[in-house]
Amino acid sequence: MSQAGSLYLGFDVGTQSTKALVIDAVRHTVVARGASPHTLLPGLPPGHLEQHPRQWLEAVLAAGRQALAEVDPARIAGIAVSGQQHGCVVLDAEHEVVRPAKLWCDTATAAEANELSERLGRAVPTGFTASKVAWLCRHEPANWARVRTVLLPHDYVNWWLTGELSMEFGDASGTGWFDPVTRTFDAAAMAAIDPSLASRLPPLRQSGALAGRLTAAAAQALGLRPGVPIGPGGGDNMMAAIGSGATAAGVVTASLGTSGTIFARTESPVQDPAGAIAPFCSSDGAWLPLLCVMNVTGVTEEVKLLTGLDHAALTAAAAAVPIGADGLLWLPFLLGERVPDLPTATGSLLGLRPGLLRPGHLYRAALEGTSLNLAQGLDRLRELGLLVDEVRLCGGASHNVLWRQILADLFGVPVRPLLESESAALGAAVQALWAVQRAAGERELTSDAVAQPFVALGAPVAPQPRWRPAHQALRVRYAEALARLHPTAR
Image (cartoon, rainbow, N blue to C red; front, side, top):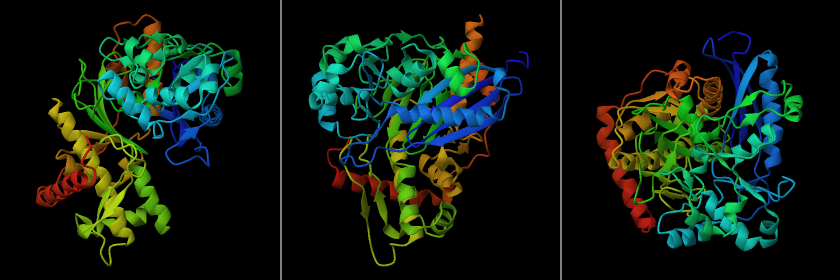
């Protein structure tokens, strides 16, 4: 590959911000970065969590221009987009946004999710897009009547970049109306949501197929040349899988951000009768069984806001507190929860005694509570046949040394941080490279062959045998508290 066109741009449009990252396909390095924040819409009732898609486009432009200022824009040879999964973007006949997007963490649609689950005879999590469309049909029929196209967040950004409407298998498999085994839209599920839904969905594209090419208007806004190929992109978890090297069987990744996920690539679908593990497709032609919890760094952020201390000071204080936080136990369901299925739950802080409402104890309890919930999910993945010898960590929490040790001890295997923590943006850039090379005729090229040179791992953190009894006792106490306070949890 020549130096002239060796740069690829990846965007990750998340809940809190959009990240942009440029990779050099010859040197296998990240050469530029950008970031721009966005916020939730204020003043909504509890459970309603929304953003206007316009914010995402503004953030893409700001983050993209910031990254592109560090390189020669003429060398950009491909772009792809990672997006927060499950958000519901609805457009009218002129492709204008009808109403703000309900996000993955919106739990106001719990009743619709329960009804769909009963009607379809399978779990439809509140977080999935299906419940959001059903909610819109029921509560805002006038808005639904205006809708001509239903998209996911990354699909909407792709449409702005290319002028073409499409979905890809990975992100689509988190809607609730997609069959991940056959990789097709599920006619029964769509009809159960609304009989007209099928007519309002864009076409599906094959894994690795380009989503289109950069329009003149988007090119001018970003400062790029028109016609740059746009990869299919995908959900943030699918892109994080590529960016963390979970492009080959046996690699398990935990992404630790506002929400938390654990996933691994498999060559055949993994179906969970209990519904705890999502049977997603990957965005590179395989499958990606995935655990998702809604509460990770949001819990530690609350302690930071309460105490006024930064995370470094809180981590140091928590490290001086023994395992189990002297009896303080946090069921960390501040946003409700997806696994276990508790969309309307609230957090519980148990074992309060004098002297425990201290920064170190609160922070330790937050680290342990979120990690215990992830560990229960990893147990379920193991029950479904996933072999776990090591877990790679990405996302904001992967930087915290104490948190890494707690996860290693509770997972019972070594954990290794990815040196590039923005794995979703990296995965998008790598997928763009893969899609462009496939479009150029390299049809047999695997995503794994393209991804591995970009994946760099930090030193492993091993579980400590001497702490195993204390952590086992903590796991038992957490399970008992969960069963006592939430007996219907699954």
